[in-house]
Amino acid sequence: MNILNLTYPALAERLAAMGEPRFRADQVWQWLWARRARDFTDMTNLSKELRAALADEFTITWPEVADTAVSSDGTTKFLLRMDDGALVETVIIPETDHLTQCLSTQVGCAMGCAFCATGALGFDRNMTHAEMAAQVLVARQYLADQGREPKALRNLVFMGMGEPLANLDTVLDVLATLGSDTGTGFSSRRMTVSTVGIPAGLKRLGESGLASLAVSLHAPTQELRERIMPKAAKVPLDELIKALERYPLAPRQRITIEYVLLGGVNDSPEQARQLVRLLAHVKCKINLIAYNPGPDATKDSAKGAPFKAPGEQRVLAFQKALWDKGMTAVLRKSKGRDIAAACGQLRAKATGRPAAP
Image 1 (cartoon, rainbow, N blue to C red):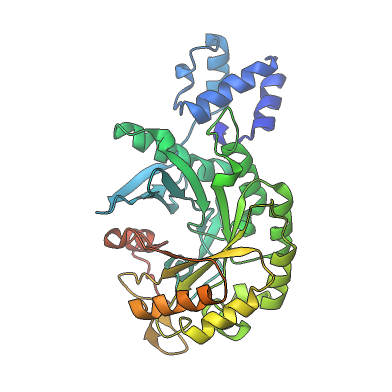
Image 2 (spheres, rainbow, N blue to C red):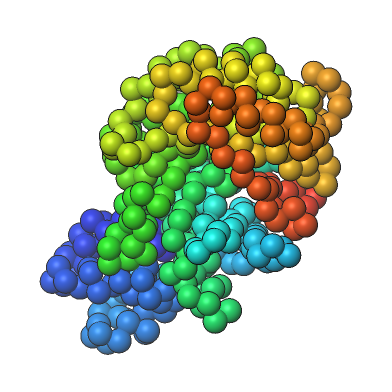
């Protein structure tokens, strides 16, 4: 089996069963996750006998980099091929003084949001612990190979392909792995899980304290959410908001509300005021981002017309309407437009499957 599928407790248990002392688990774990070892022979502080025994029982298997695209703005997207041939995407996004990586949690997505290229591709399966966590190893190794500091990658956002709370058991294990001090060493404050909002999963994630929360809302009313996010909207909006009001937060922590502005659909000042009323009792900040159309713009089935990016003045008016009511609203720039960096676009191109229903 792939040793990267073992959590730290599981690895320690396996090594103990092999007659090894506890500290061996720390050594192997550090080789795998901090030093990015690809072969057991590299683990030079282990005995030859143990290295051979590990090689007999395990492999160290990373996803294969099937394609890499680098944007003019520094955004780098990887198309990764898993052992079974499945393709997923992960993206490194440059920030002012660090890098953020967007991680996938499923091969495809079952949510079917009307404006999302991944949703249009459908759902294949959940990703494993190794597949999910090793996205970080691939990214840090890429940085090292480019002569860049691997630890400049400091933020992780689980908002790539898939709905994280639909693969929650594995996501929680991965968060623990990536947050390990002797492994990749990410702070829980620098890992964010983005979800459309599954109340039972929200409760478990909040109780774990392993990551910050972001919620893909995108609509201020149940009616509009049903149109653009039909499967997510099976959880009534008032039920989701009540779950967010109860969500456990540290004193300075806030939930991030993600809101993609779709031209002429959800971007009017009145809809901004509806959003303010909806979130009145949620401790949150709002990330606004203008819709990034793919090469084949997703169709709005109700209108029979493609979604479009909103005009700049409309975006600014929406943001101002939030500010005027005392809401924290940040306008996020879409990056990687020239490399189809929006979620699902590169996979759609590679598979030849349409990125639109």
